[in-house]
Image (cartoon, rainbow, N blue to C red; front, side, top):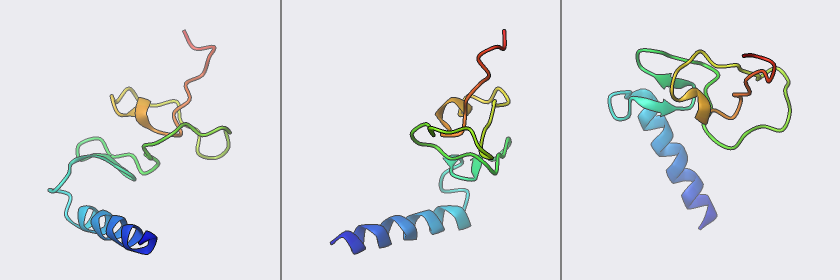
Length: 75
């Protein structure tokens, strides 16, 4: 049963990725049609600040990205 759900999720993701008119906002790697972000990955926050660290560019979906971690010393 686990393999079925994995197949279903991957199938849906590939369909959405190939046809962006299905969903226009919040797709991993394509944050927004008008404001793309290749690093966008919605989900839980990452525990480390390595290569995939982002301070955001002001887009409203930046706060939902797992790599978003604004600098604490910014005013």
